[in-house]
Amino acid sequence: MAEAPLLQPARQGSTVTAPRGNRSRSHVERAERGVPEATVARLPIYLRALTSLAEGDVLTASSEDLAGAAGVNSAKLRKDLSYLGTYGTRGVGYDVNYLRYQIARQIGLTQDWSVIIVGIGNLGHALANYSGFASRGFQVAALIDSDPARVGERVGDLRISSMDDLDDILSRSSVAIGVIATPAGAAQDVCDRLVAAGVGSILNFAPAVLTVPDHVDVRKVDLSIELQILAYHEQRKAHGLALLSDDPVVRAGAAL
Amino acid sequence: MAEAPLLQPARQGSTVTAPRGNRSRSHVERAERGVPEATVARLPIYLRALTSLAEGDVLTASSEDLAGAAGVNSAKLRKDLSYLGTYGTRGVGYDVNYLRYQIARQIGLTQDWSVIIVGIGNLGHALANYSGFASRGFQVAALIDSDPARVGERVGDLRISSMDDLDDILSRSSVAIGVIATPAGAAQDVCDRLVAAGVGSILNFAPAVLTVPDHVDVRKVDLSIELQILAYHEQRKAHGLALLSDDPVVRAGAAL
DNA sequence: CGTTTTTTGTGCTCACGTTCACAAACTCCT
DNA sequence: AGGAGTTTGTGAACGTGAGCACAAAAAACG
Image 1 (cartoon, protein in one colour):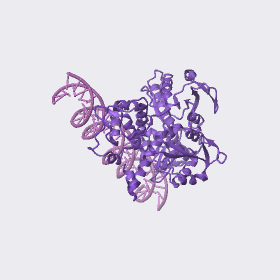
Image 2: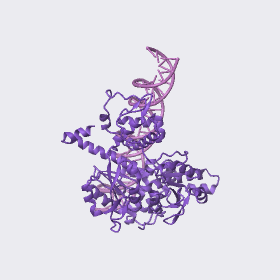
Image 3: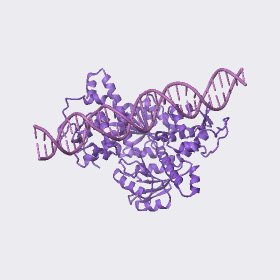
Image 4: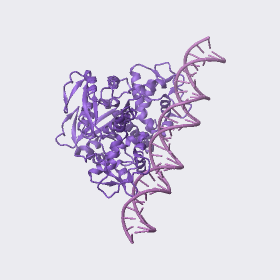
């Protein structure tokens, strides 16, 4: 799955003229103060949509096109992009490669990030082998597991290290992001050790609430919670149908 | 990891008296119309916190206690619970087991749900073996993969079936929830086939935007997007520090 | 039995996010 | 060159969610 090249600092190709950059606030100034969190969460989606368009050799896309590819409302997309700067051309749309570069720069994907994964069970294993990381500039720098029997085992082209080596590894290379895929019981302890070693962002797959200092970011992914949310809606659907049912027995059951 | 028993339809033990159920709107009526989506997403977290308290033989918990265990503000927790009904006792708090049952009932966890997983790669494998599903009433009913070489392979105590068997499987047992863990390219097609076969809720791990009819719910989990969001914040931290730096070269670099 | 203490349930306010709708900016065609 | 047609960027209206702060309810205690 070869991707179109990412680094593309200037507009090119296409019939679109470059925007006159002299009027209006500078992009840097604009981007500097507060992109809303909801917008940040959507930027990677836009990036993916742009990449997909670029692979189809599309040079220009309207907000409507892009919004379609990203699965959002076009007004929302335009507003989101407006927080980054004015990268579109009225009457035309957005230069796909140019916009792609700008978003990638904003997110920080023009540099590589080292990631460390702690807890190499089922899930940690899958994460270690997940190709979607590397292709977006996330390099797995080390794998850690507390089980001595597992230490030394090969996963992909890395070897599992022991918990004791954690500080060592983190002091040698600069790792900013830690992924926790341990059981719930171990998560807070692992988290504390990662934070102590200078990790500033944590992606937590363990079903546990993590407590961290203010300067550390945590995001949580919880598989069973997602299923539970779906179950809730699914139940409501069934419930509603039951209330409409002709069968009084079904109706009575639903009303409980 | 033995969990405390879930089904507990009536209050018991503890010194808390049962609420007088005759005044105020009925719980059913209240729960019927719109629990906010944000609240629904937190219910599973509360449930987990309650389970954890119950395992520690805690019988009663205040909103403050619960909120602490769930990692949220106590006012928010109280308001969330108020959408379900009046299950607390002023001056006392909530009966842990009673509330646990009520939330589980609301989410729909008092019944079992069958789940089908499509795409048994790294991630699908991990999901198939994930114990967190079974323990919350989600039973994996079948595993599907399009690769003929993989069909028949054993994973846990299931055998991988072919895509062709999909309709067969779904018509025999009633599966409401489908999990897509295929590559992005296959996701929409798999999704369409699941929907056609009557699946009403989909959990999508593939990095693709799915289009579904209105009556179908989709939730998306995207690992690399989570990392990208963390990268954004991490970059901003580094950026801010650079702007504060004494070194003019670092400052200049940061200002680009 | 009244007073104090605890803790819930909720009205209210503010902040954030979404969507509409339209002027401004640009292209294209005659 | 000017008018018709497109499409962006954004002000304004609206909707949802978060958090404060307090009355109401229950318990504890003298």
